[in-house]
Image 1 (cartoon, rainbow, N blue to C red):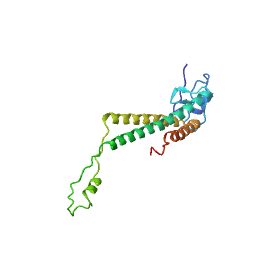
Image 2: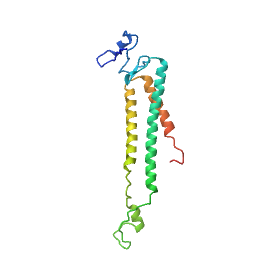
Image 3: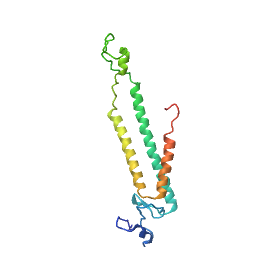
Image 4: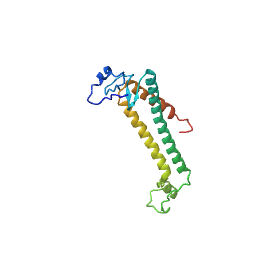
Length: 179
């Protein structure tokens, strides 16, 4: 079955009346509330029933919640790496301070060692690869969400907002012991 895809040169409002048994995609670059025959991302994601549209809206909500989940996983992984770094024996760089010297502005050698910056532990190649993969997944999901928003379908945008609310509510909740 051949599908008629719109292009930038077509009048999108005229696509409603096209013959062909309703097999054409309704794509609008203006704010719209199209449900039946709306297409998103590709022609294979064409809405043919209200139930399919509701399923798509639920899928968009879950996709945005997945983005918030990935953000939480990235945050927890970074916190895990920071905790791992702090659990290592402290390697303070002691300053060469003569306790009898009057040129030092420090009260004691102990204070001088606290003021020295600790050497930062770099993540291993495997840890950095994992962090990079998490970032790539976040970027990819966010890009798909942005593409969906660019269809200017009110229901899809509302689904994105609901998914953002629910995802943040569920995945950014921290108990008192986690802080």
